Length: 378
Image 1 (cartoon, helix red, strand yellow):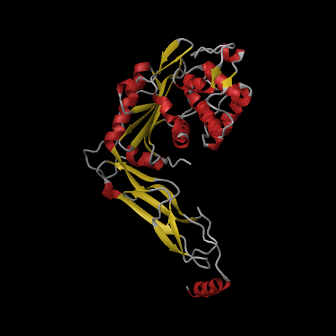
Image 2 (cartoon, one colour; image 1 turned 135 degrees about the horizontal axis):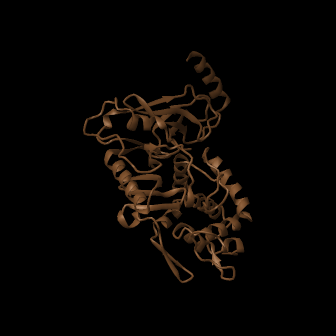
Image 3 (cartoon, one colour; image 1 turned 90 degrees about the horizontal axis):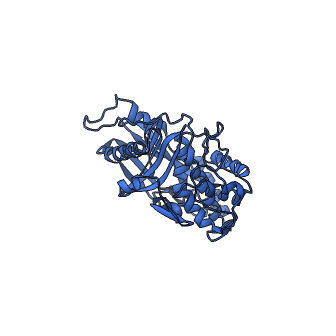
């Protein structure tokens, strides 16, 4: 679950009283958009935001949920990339941007995925939806169920394409949850978002994400536009070991969504730095175990632990590790053994569970009896 905490936003963007050097510009630049969020992906921390919970029309950003569920089906092997997908009349006659699939022309799942991500084909999106759920309406139910799982609490889908509907909405915050999950859960498919053009049925169409040409560090993700939604762009850039995600919604032109997104990405990389504190599944502490087959258990974190803070301000970051005592067998792998609290200038930014990295079964009768006495004395 995302640890995208608004206290971090308050800490770094909205509270001018925080003691920081005068040359650290923690106020985000002006962005000409209806709403946006800027997220450091590794630490899952929010760097800046404008109206993050304002309901908006997602337009073709909807297709990120369509491909999320497609990637999930591929991972679960209920679909295969080479599988031929039938094209219904409903998909063939889709309004708006199209891949130009045809009912009598075979098309594979892999081709449809490219058509959705690169060409933003509404026809391809509907074909994928029908392949997975039988109908677009049934697929929308799956989209909403996954939105609930991802805790996209202010999102509702009625179609797989993003065509306008009063009951089809989301927020910048919720889109951040979706995209972060997509990057985290399906890294093997992420390179598709960097492809600049795709040819199908004799027609070559470019990726509408201009930043793929403007900035070599940008490798995704998706554009969206309708008259009512304005011009939207979710962009992601990797520089070194850092990835920042900019979700910019409701700008007034194709060029504006690119320039405003670039502005935010540059500010995020220049103003903040990210530390890798702990590796996933690496022992960071050994804790005593009572009544166990072994006397100790290795403890660590079930995820990579990162921390983002203003550049040059490492000394203001504090880590506090609190352990649960006593630990009595049996201990299950993954069982919570404590909590790591990460703070900046005394304000909590993130918390992580310290967990057992290995199981410890119950010990023999002598060990249990002896440790009962030890616990009474302790």
